[in-house]
Structure formats: C-alpha cells, structure tokens
Length: 153
Image (cartoon, rainbow, N blue to C red; front, side, top):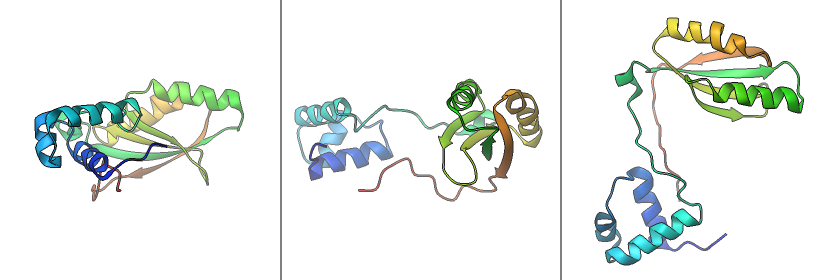
C-alpha cells in the first residue's frame, strides 16, 4: 500500500464529506495550487482510494424513506445457491445494499420502500420469488441517528 501524506488524507476527508468541490476550492483548503491538487486527486483515483463520486439522494423526497434491514438465511450453503441469491438480489430495485455476513444470518439487505404496504409487497412478491432464501427477519428503522459516508483517519 502506498504511503499517503497529510495532504492526501486531508483531500480524501474533504472529498469524502462533499465531492462537489472544484479543484480550485480544494487547493485553497489544502494550501496548494490547483495543478498539484489535480495531480494528487488523479493519483488517489488511479490507485483506488477514490472509487467513484456520487450524489446522496434524499429517499423521502422519492417516497422511498421507509428503511428496513432484512436478515436472510439461505436454504443451504453451497456455491450454486449462494451465486443464485446474489444474482437475484442484484436485480431487485428496493435492495440498495447487500452484505454477506457471519453469524446467525448469511446476508443483510438494506431496503428502501414507500411504506409498510410496499415492504410487504416486496417481501411476498420479490423476496418470495428468490428460491434460495430459507428465512428472513426484518428490522424497521425508526430514526436515522448517524450516517457518515466517510472513513475516519
């Protein structure tokens, strides 16, 4: 792993909090001219420290503010069933994140829905169509307390 200096870490922290800064704005914040800042950002991108830039959308504005964490147990543990599950989940719009985990469950899904009725329809008609699922357990988000999209250095 390449050594990152304090300026690299400062740039990553700034961009991790708000990636819409221009190179000129970044340069002012890290006390460099724009050219070396652009070179540093390109190096951080090329070396995989920055993987992409996104806009974080307010899901409530799109009537998708009902957040559910859905724990999944597979019917069996073999490569075919696991791969089938991953392929099926990748094609379901309501699932915005999916993690393969250890412990009592095999996967955790983060699901955005309009409301409880929409989530019920999702469980019956979309998750219900995924043959590899053995059981599910849903946890409903009452309030989001902290959601940082950054890494602490």
